[in-house]
Image 1: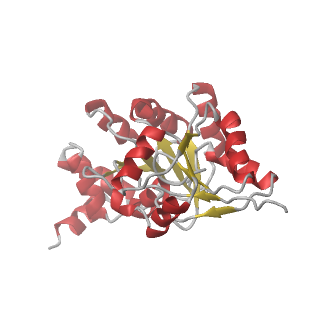
Image 2: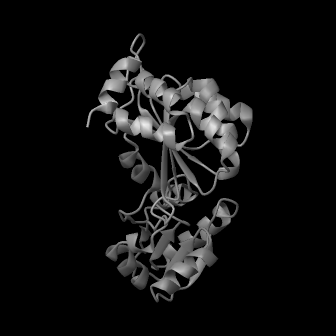
Length: 278
């Protein structure tokens, strides 16, 4: 009698607020035989919070080949496995991508569950176009490779999405400016957490802002796409919001007015008239 193959479940976990976990993910975690986790200590905290007791195995970038084969063996023996990452959607900027490929090659069933995702959460609140976007993930630590990557996407008209760590943010902002030119950017940090923040500037002023403020928390960067040749870049946000964002970042009101007007393709006088209306 041929043994039935198990199923790999891709289970998204909260990116901050634990209440964002779905009922379906919780029910899946309760019934699987094994949980494969990027960081077992962190995932154990999540399981304990929801009073779920399951055997765990670590699966991360530096052991993915060996552990991938171990997980495959469990699946081929008929066990079900839940793959979770530290936060968000497994297999997105995550070694789970390799496990999915391995399971497909070995004809192991895969069931993806919907749930939290930092990139889309940031995008829909950014105010930049959402009809077409390009997710670029984490940029390389190597400066040459990072700039080659940015130069390759510099002509994309799609809104660009990047992930970035706080200690790399300043150098990344400078590379974005150098390779893409001055564009609007929304810096999203601490998503779904107590200190969630959306900072809407252009790249030049984002660099200035973080010369005076220490980057904290993990960032999602939403960057305006390239304008068609000869077409001025006009910010999608309301004039009032652009102006207020500049004021909040410490820019004097006259300069903030001038910069906001430029982003909306308005004269300074027209922008002033709009802002002074009750």
